[in-house]
Image (cartoon, rainbow, N blue to C red):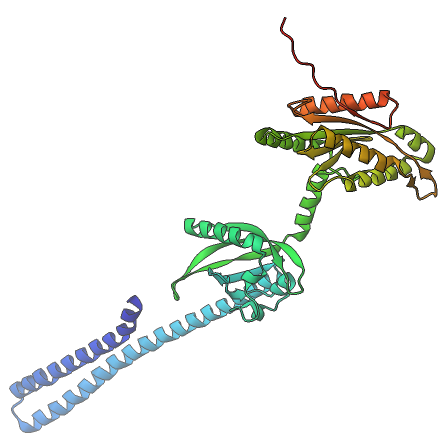
Length: 396
């Protein structure tokens, strides 16, 4: 409405000027003739007065017209100079913005907030980030940006952005992105919703950065926090956490849970005979044998040194003893061949404890399995011992 009103202002001003000019001309002609006839009765004199009166009118109107046109042209000139300066400033800003966009480490964008994330603008960083040319993503000409987002992240991403837009706040999200060559990268996106005044729709503007290196480092740190660096098995801290979870689950569903406590027999002899590097190789080889000798639902970890722990969910006494015996034979059944050409023979001693028979907490179950393992050592090593059942309490 304001735009339409502004369009009518020049026309209204022009009409006002014309109307004023007509009024002034009519008044001049009417009153000047009346005054001339009243003052000058001689026809010759009256004719001269009317001639000079007409010349005066032309002179006055010409002067007024000259002043008005001069002021308008000067105003137009100033306006044209201002517009020229504004266009030059806009061109400089566009060049600066283009240089900035082209040198950003990621991709700047403007898109519709629709199911396809329809891109209206993407910077040249799109090539390095997605493998697509900017024109291929704009208006979904070759592929929509939404099709590059992993399905496992799409729904959560949409919800997070919608919530931020509804609250009028910027959003920051991380998700996996599939490039044109099929490779997958991790990206971090930050942006916010803006209203398009011309189209009356919601748009998103922001930047997308490649964080694959950071994500890989985070995964590596997470693995270091949960995995044993030598064998690749779970470390003591993670095994303790998993044991707590499994005991809680077994208690909730009234299921059994077996725990194997394993220690290598005379492992120091291998280190002394072949060196610590060979000892590490034996640890890796034997841990891999045990890992492949258990079920996919079972969990194995290294508690430290040459001690290993295996969790056997929903397994009772008989099955646990059978599994432990199978692992003992699997380890001691064949030697470990070293890079030096030597062969190292190794046996293991295993203590077995079952929840809830031998303990109701992680500490008590571990203690029962550990004591059973030491009893296996005392029994001559290379054997399996079940933890003794707790004696029932007698009333005095």
